[in-house]
Every structure is written in structure tokens, then in C-alpha cells.
Length: 302
Image (tube, rainbow, N blue to C red; front, side, top):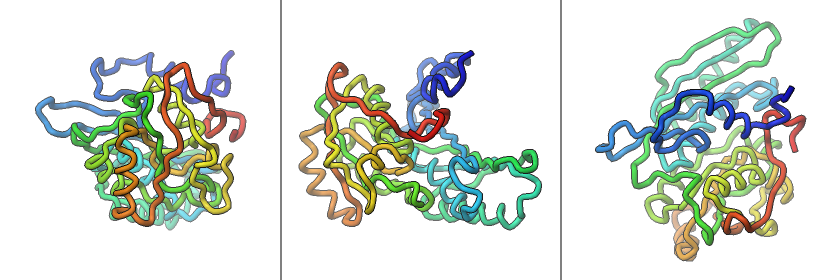
């Protein structure tokens, strides 16, 4: 009998989504950072839909301050809206907590949620609470809507051979706490799609070694990267930059002819945030391979 560990997260998603009715003409279906729904062809905007969950002892430790957990729960979703070129709108929060959970912990969790919404935008629209058996892991599930202007929508699947690969910020070290206090790159992406629109983009949640092959495959491309060029957080190694995950920086492809102008203009707008050229997309039957990164159903972190 095959198990989830045998097939892994990506194959599981492919198998499950094939079993249910789906939009036959989606603007973007399962497999991108958000689902994209075109409700009104005459509207200048498209609707974004996103859901995400944090599980105790998987995404945060029992000792993690609840306010930091709340921030991360919402920031992860907003990072995915940014990866599509969009903005957050309305949020639903589902809590599954053991009865012995302190009321103060739940209140601090919501303070963290509110902190992130105040900084990044978005409003709480509702939610749900449920109990789990005593001693079980806490689960915080976030569902949200967002919008993106049609001309600013960026998918994973529209890169092309010859495009330059770039990342914002620095990579590696998420296990030292960076994953709890990152700021979604909403502002930077809005500037980017307005001035130097990428051909493909996603946020780095499972590690460059896992996410770059996903983006290249979606675009029917291969890839080449220069590991020596990877921008590292202090104390991190190239291996950590590739495999730690939860960097929540933007990985994007862009027409190579636009790179000099982008690199010249970026520092004036975002002097504190690095922007680094790390490689290029190539034809699907060329390039290199990467292994590792986060898989929810692997025996252990690779």
C-alpha cells in the first residue's frame, strides 16, 4: 500500500485535485501560489484565493510566543498574494486547539494576526473554532481573498528559456528564527510588476531547491543556478540557502534584457533589500537538478 511518504506532497496534490470537479477555464488553478478566479471578464481585477495552515511542532514550537505564531500565520498567506502581484483583502481564521490551551495564548495569537493585518493590509471577516483531543497539536488555518489587476498578474508557468533568475533578500537560516518575523514583500512586488514585470514568480516557502524546480517545471523549462552567487543570511551556508525553506523571499524570472535597468533602479527604491541574479531558465531538456527542501510527508527534512 502506498503512503503519503512514498509519493510526496506534489504528487499527492496532483492525485487529489484530479478527483473533484474543477474550473475548466481557470485564470490559474491548483499548483500556483494562489488560485485565480475570473468572475467578470469586464473587470480590471481578478480574484485571488488562498488557504494555509500552521501546525504546532511542524511550523512552530510549543514554546514559540503566540503573537509570533499569529504574525507568521497571516504573513505566509500575504506572501503568496504578493507572489501573484496582488493585494490581500478578507481573512477567515480557523483555530483547532486543545481545551487546556490558555486563553491568554489564544488572545496573543490574535494580537499577532492583527499586527500583520495592520502592517500589510487586509481585514478579518470571520472564522471558526474547534477542539482537538487533549495534548494534540494546535492548528491555525487561514483562508483569505485578494485581488490583482489583470495586467499585473504573474504566474509560475509563464517563464521562458533565456530569462534571468533573481531573488530578493537573503536566504538560509530560517531555522534560527527568521521564519517567525519576516515581512511579506508586498511593497517591493508592487513596484516590480509596475516597472519591470517578471515573466514568472513565486515565494520561497519550501526552499530554493524545492521551489525553483517547481517554477521551472510549470514554465516547461530547465534551469541553471550559480550557487556561489546565492545571497546568504549571516552564518548560513549555500546548502542552507537551498534547503532550509521558509525564507519567504521572492524568486522570479525576468527577460534578460531588462535586468541591467532593474538592477540600476532597485537600490534607489529599496536600499536595504538585496536583489541578486542567481541563474537563468533554459530549455526543458537542459540545465541542472536540485534535491532537498521541505516536503511535508518526507521522513525528515532533507
